[in-house]
Amino acid sequence: MRLSLCAQPCSPDMNTAIFEGVWIPLVTPMTGANGAQIDRNAFARLVDYYLAAGVNGLVVAGTTGEGTLLDDDERRWLVETACHLAHGHAPVVAGVGAADTANAAQQIRNIEDLPLAGYLVPPPYYLRPSQEGILWHYRTLAAGTRKPLVLYNVPLRTGVTLGVETIRELASHDAFAAIKECDAHPLLHLPSQVTMRVLCGDDMQLLPALQAGAVGCISAAAHVRPDLYLKLFRYVREGDMAHATTLFNGMKPLIRRLFSEPNPVAIKAALASLGLCPETVRRPLMPCTPALRREIDTQLEVTMAF
Image (cartoon, rainbow, N blue to C red; front, top):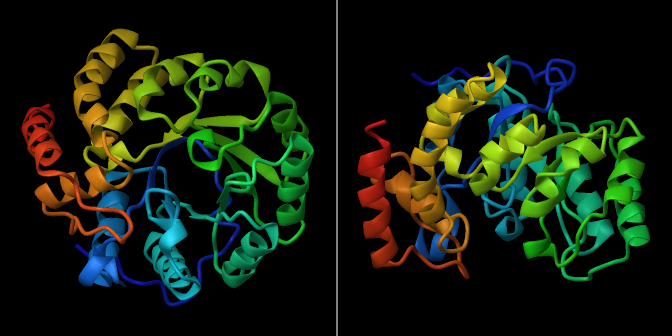
């Protein structure tokens, strides 16, 4: 059943997020030649689906949402729609990122009036700035918003790593609420090194990260079976590591395949097989290869039987 749109914008106070639990970094359904348009009906259905599943939060227009391929109007529509549909149910965070700090700041200004819980922000892409430059970037963006920033350490995509001392410095300011950590080695040590909330961004390391003190995840693979991720989180919270380990070991074969090609190519292929979303991606991303699609479909049969 479709959640009704709220008549008035959501209150930012309602969306003051506790950044923990299972967050879905929503794909952006695409249609048309080369993914030229957003499939708006499919996006609304996905938001409803994950809210009904009980996830703790949604990230819109991030990496998995092909955020760098969206224009300003598309990003605004996605964020506004998610905020309306999620009103009273779950907080929404918007992905914001650019090589140019001024560009990232403009992205924030374009949606600052919306009732977001915050912004998920990586360091500047490609430039590989020093740690001092990264601090300047984040402080500049924080000065332009009343909403919290979630740091996003993803060196595979940005070419630069957020250092522990940099994270500690940012953690000392209220403007920075959490960090999504995607680098496997720091992920298993960071919770004991910083006071900031740590969210797992590497699905294959989810259980070890939770055992190490991460308080949740922003998980692309959770698109497929959000209930299993919620169950895993509950097992860990209750200290039931035997069931958590068995469940996670069963999830890993599908997770591994969902990241065998550039994200979100395989995620969209899996969602298409489940009838939840078109598999179209925006160029220059290319559709899932037939061989991987067959592997995903085979593994889906196993995972859906859990």
